[in-house]
Image 1 (cartoon, rainbow, N blue to C red):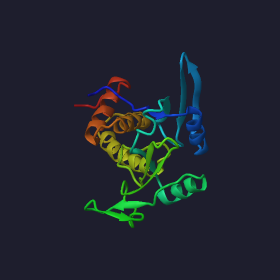
Image 2: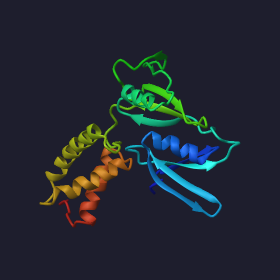
Image 3: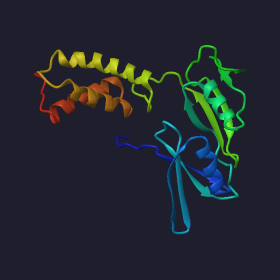
Image 4: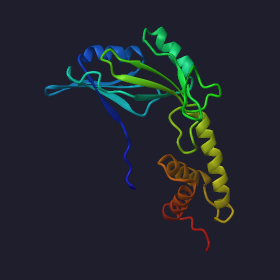
Length: 209
């Protein structure tokens, strides 16, 4: 597909919305909304630094059925310690090795996605902390400085090839188009082509044949 589809919200079934709201606010999650829509109460919270949010559905029969919800963190040991200080029961950290065998403790080399730890909310909905130390270029998240730096370096190198053959232009225009394409999932060659088209179609900068 070429149309954008951005994941924004997941719904958690809970037995008591006020209890769930209090728990997640206690974790420091931002309260985005709490209002009534007819017979339905809409409550939304967002984890710190996350582009996606949670909402609640009051459903005692299904409460706790949401499992394996991933929370990417830069330092899993620090995050676990903070949650424990807040009174959350977090399981011990474990990690996968290169052969996908499970071992106790943090991955010694802190490979991305290897180290994990789990906790549950009062209804039993299950969350998994996942240590993400470095994203691939073009997959940077909010506040992810290291990955954004790598994407900037990649963009500069790609722009150098364009600049060598293009007439004078404002380089931030090409940078912006390239980075948006990469963050939307395009591969480097596809992103460079998209940036070239943007410069020609929108900015009127045409590369001589």
